[in-house]
Length: 115
Length: 114
Image (tube, rainbow over all chains, first blue to last red; front, side, top):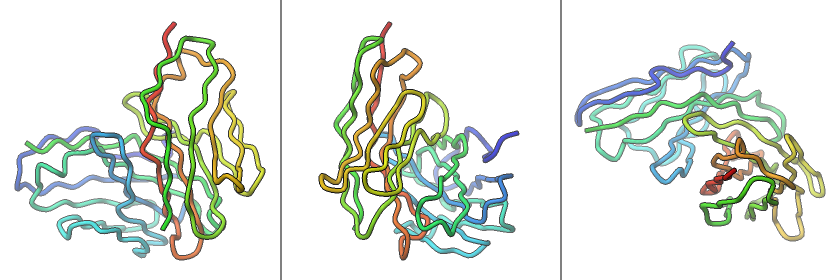
């Protein structure tokens, strides 16, 4: 069973389009995250939700909007896609409340290419 | 703020060579430290972690010791294999206001040749 799954795995689209990436975890965790990995492999947090509540919102354009319908799902919707949005997007989850010691489990990533 | 600095890559080694990937950090408070590994085309997997000073994390022959005095968490392996070829990320995590956020280093690409 896949612990953290993302769909789609690959996404190729035109500039200006709107797209969504879905994430689901079956670990029973209460915290989920979105990270962006650029072409140089640098990873940076975008958002974090705890029990469906937004708790981290880094400096991300308003075109990016996360939505958490329940604790097991955290989707990422991107409006008006730009070339610079091309990256690999990783979803992750963890069980919070461990004072920073908790392990985050990552999904396989969604490779987004904006043409 | 928090930051993590890893040694520049890429690192290229022959099979059975000794591996060190340096990692130093800056953090407020007392962070937990992690090494994650990303195999080609895959997501990140936790390799090992240490949650307090002088702790040693170990897994699959890899080790790292949390050194508070030098703010370091260097990754070592005595004898690498071709299958260890991957990107390695050092990361830290503090509690409090940075709830949940992992701060990553820039990643080090390791290639092991037969």
